[in-house]
Image (cartoon, rainbow, N blue to C red; front, side, top):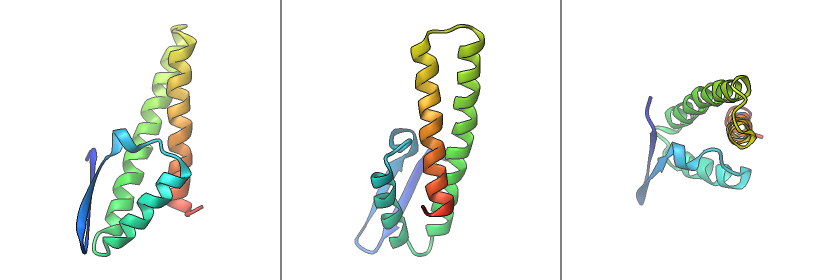
Length: 99
């Protein structure tokens, strides 16, 4: 799985480290989508790459949340993974549905 999104456009390029960018605010995600649109030759591939990465990490954070709950791990750890999962789910919805 590719952890880096490379966006190339007419006057430059942008590299997004997915782990650092997601979960993101709706505002930041919409800005990213505008930049992705500039890479006309690869925009569908870039959105698919981000969607795949998010989907895989939703599953990872879901599993981590369950492990924390099953082991009675600190509430803060469970909350951290749960919030990341929820944030990624919102990002995924925006990427796939455009809302």
